[in-house]
Image (cartoon, rainbow, N blue to C red):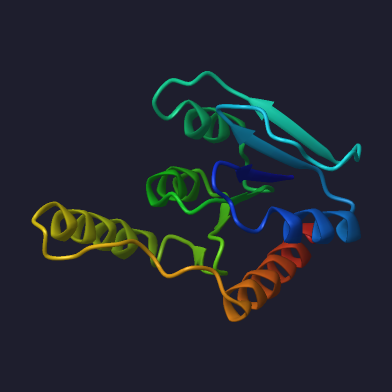
Length: 147
């Protein structure tokens, strides 16, 4: 199963296409309903608007046989600790080897922005990032099919 931290996820269309090819269920999780393609493989799960409600719901559901797609490093960390595969929207897979550094980098950047040393956010999605995402998604789903 693929769980998508759906608020602001820029690769939902790519996930739908690949999920149809693999015939794998996708659950999009968010604080408010959003339109999704009409397909029995796709489900929209609306959670309460409480702080981290979507993250908490995802963490409660996932198993090592699942994949979570998120740009939220702290959610990624929680899922990795449960043995779940985690992929960000630019094709970077988080695992036990890199999640600690990713969390530390997130905190550093947050502190730099707070002190005014840095402005803006991450670079926008481009064709290369979408291609990286699709390649990583395909590789992970092939591996999960073998479990």
